[in-house]
Length: 261
Image 1 (spheres, rainbow, N blue to C red):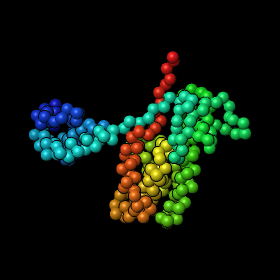
Image 2: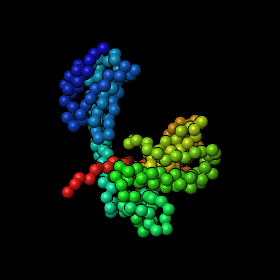
Image 3: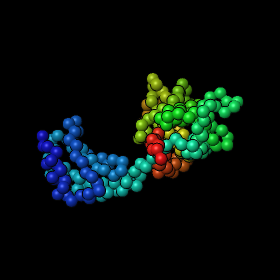
Image 4: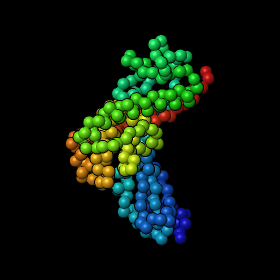
């Protein structure tokens, strides 16, 4: 088996752009050479153990135009997610509405619990350590989001002849907005951060997963899935493109500790 240095030397001879940050990875289970463009524009060359350096270099060279297009797209859409400090007046988006954070020592009169959102755009959370405020806010997103899924899901279930579907809202990491899990789970799950997106994009993510639920055993994004999406949401491709841009700026839970002044 040829070592990584030999492949690096062969690729260096191609004089590839420095900003591609090309890495090589020998994958024992691979049968063919592959190229992966990562978020932010880095390029990974995935190499089977039987490949020769000159073969890999020819393969990469023949895909130079494709790599250029993918790197440009990945760089343009690189994540730049919001970071919160959890201070009074900080803004949070929830189900298409904007709320200003208000840290309090006790629930407002006439209310039973915190956190709490009000019609005048206030998000009240108990004053405590930032990490605990963060957890409380995310918990609210989950609570409000789950109620929304149950409410909005009814029409999809009727239209799509979906029965026995369950819903959940949780953290799905940094690459997934939602997932549908087929039988026996038969469940649609959305990332809590979805509910900080504009409403039309929340609707897109939900419809995307619900379309999967109409065909649990079907091809994931095949013709039948696309027909269902066009039926439910004729402009779904436009919303998909919007999500790629808007989603890279949304809040995924990142926070920064306040420094003393």
